[in-house]
Amino acid sequence: CGIHGSVVTEAGTGIPGVTVSVVGESTGTVLELVRGAEGLFHAGKLAAGSYRVTAGREGFEPALAMVSLTEAQSVPVRLVLGRLSLGP
Image 1 (cartoon, rainbow, N blue to C red):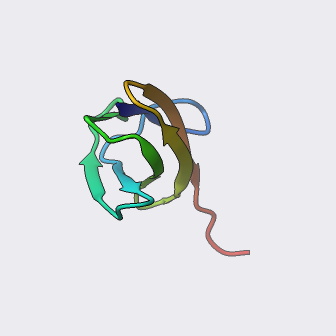
Image 2 (cartoon, helix red, strand yellow):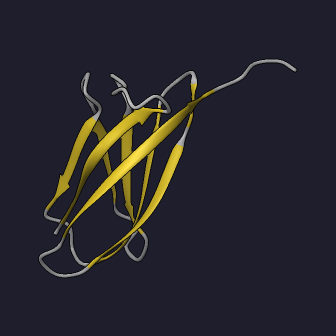
């Protein structure tokens, strides 16, 4: 079982230095991943269950996806970070 995917801007480009967190909803287990220039990530060897996947980086609105894994399943996730707007 695993979760893999990418973290991109609204324009579809990869974001370097993004932190991706995968949290098991029933166990509370947290897996923190820091991604490279392409924004790709992979969290393998996960038990079946529900997971909260978040991504964030300074200067961007964070992204969130909820994922349910079954045995022997690999789920793709695309997280899109939006630009923070400052001021009115």
